[in-house]
Length: 90
Image 1 (spheres, rainbow, N blue to C red):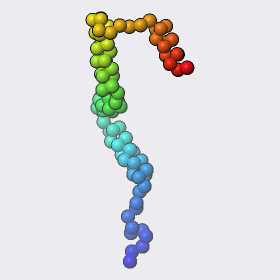
Image 2: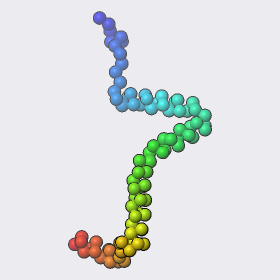
Image 3: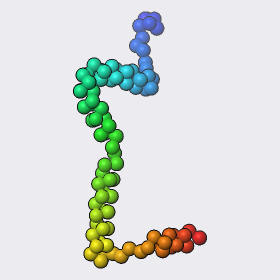
Image 4: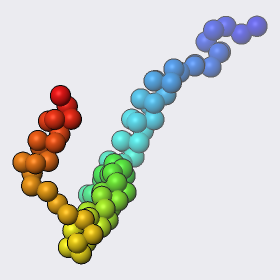
């Protein structure tokens, strides 16, 4: 029967994550400045989860503008719109 020193060390999920991040950071810092810049751009782009939402809103905005310009939809003055919203909230 072995002693406790022979047993493998069990890391918590948090400790494992911290180790992984430290290794990742160390490896990234080995890259050249240009490679790090390119990698940083990739990482920043991955944070832009709203790109699809922005594209959807751009399409919707264009559709609404086209509807107004063609006469299919009609705008109302902002004062009237605000009055309608205020009345609905009462």
